[in-house]
Image (tube, rainbow, N blue to C red):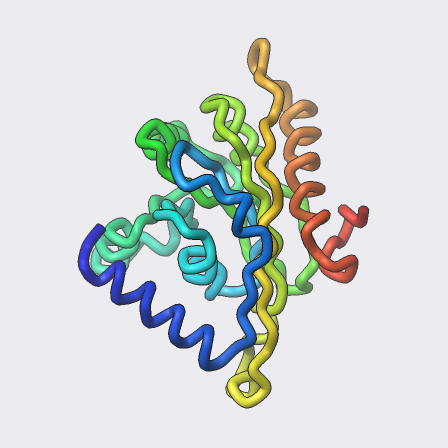
Length: 210
């Protein structure tokens, strides 16, 4: 990783400690080595760097392709550990990139909803996360994020909002005996979302209330 990766991590940690009441739960569930597919709900632009300093591993992020339209932005995003994917329609190229990183025993982060939830509640997942997990046979690590949706305007700096990163136990999706149908993809995507929902307060769970 480039030198500024470590600088950015240090700055993010410092700001979280000074400006929020940041808490990480379940850190013991993060394996220190081996491939890992991290799945989390998405509330705010700060969620990726928040995960980057909360999980004690080098992370690679699946990011929407719109962020890579600027050559300069794309350069830094790739150097910081991100690669593009078309929302709603995972391309073969993106799936191959994910497979390459997982083959290198890295942790790949996916926000299954594909975009931030402006209501704060869970939304249905796109099937790409299932394809990544099943094709590579890697453990899936669910993470529930709460509190980052409060980082709006300037007043939050004075309130020091509580932010929690709740890390669940890893699990595996069943291997596919053949090509997965859309029904099976949707069913397994719902299963992934319910594992995330179990790590969230009920007011964040949306249609996945446990």
